[in-house]
Length: 197
Image (cartoon, rainbow, N blue to C red; front, side, top):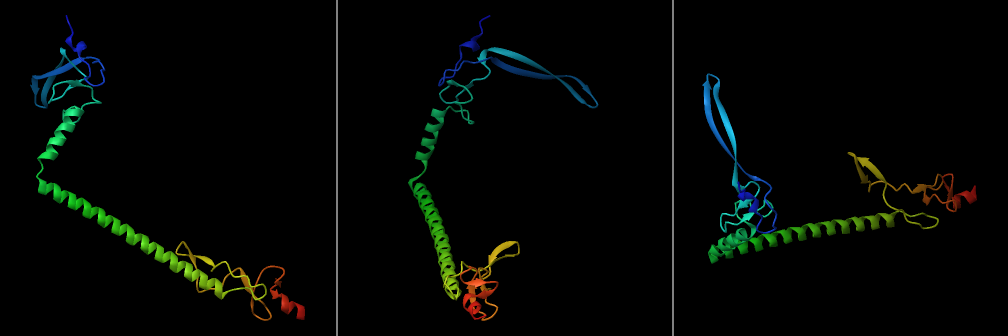
């Protein structure tokens, strides 16, 4: 018996069908109080392929890679989408284009505001750091502090702007701020006070 399904292949990639179409036929052969007993027959249709699908528009056969969920091949699907787009009235296309342009402008404006706010915050932070560093410096060598101390506040590392830096210390005699370098202080006493001891 000639198996016609063997002659089918994908119209686009040429992949051959791997088997015939299996059709099912179900019927009730007995009934019980619990429900019906249904018997299902599986019948091979040697005239049609089982793993190729026919495009509902051009009627060519395609594998599952080149057929869309709507039952159209890729080419017919694209042509159908173009026809649908062309059928949209001009005023609707203009409204859609205006809405898309407005959405893009709003997104750009929001990104610009976010960027400006970030730059403004960074500038304020830099100005605050510059002012802090200018306020604290070693009385001997003039070296400025690296910045305010860092502490954990609510599990977050926070710069404590209202506290003195930890890379400078007060001289135990004159009380001036000096750095920890051996040329400026020793055991908490600045170099100048140390000379007078």
